[in-house]
Image (tube, rainbow, N blue to C red; front, side):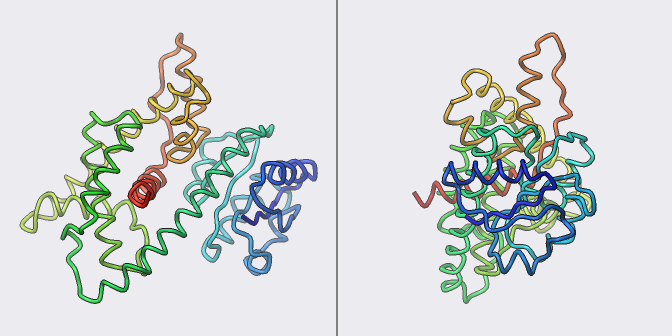
Length: 307
């Protein structure tokens, strides 16, 4: 994997480069001390796949730089900062930042997150390969709600993942399974042109499928809202479950595999601190990136089917 580092602190750039090389995560193909020095042309020439970018920089900060690059950059952004302001973190995620690493830098955390980024990009490449293969067999139009021959497998894979995430008994788990089936059918219907739909389109799709063609727009809207609330509650329970695993055993395989794949590690760490501090009431205000979770669930389910 090729990395490009944007940070105004040369010591940070040197440390990130050392970690990437020592952990055999890839190659640092370029550096810049400010976001104003980087454009998509430079990233393309360098063939960068992952941009590690500082939030606070003197001329053009990380938020503005990501906003300028995101539409034409096909790789991943990882934000780095000592600032933990929720509004800034939320804005970064909304722009497409995949992960958020806090300073001072922790070698294990950085290595773990970058491994997840690499795995995710390889999985996306695999999905594109599947899409290209499926496009050879999708010359005839299909209804988006006709079950494909893989639906059973992806639902079984989804149930396994949902069980591992500790939310098999949550009402939202059934909604998540419907989402997996919907995405699988959309991928098979659209072939190589498939892209993950927006959350709104996804919930609209499963609501229409559940209620049938005779449902009114008001009924569909009501079911969409209820479904999203059920899924959000299920994701919160999964966050608690994963954080609990990390408290019990930081080297737990499920914690290592899922803490950064499905969640932003900063939120997992916050939840771990809440659970550890039993004198305080646990907060239910965790910021969970639902879009990231659903995409990760689908890609992980596809991976289980493949292997």
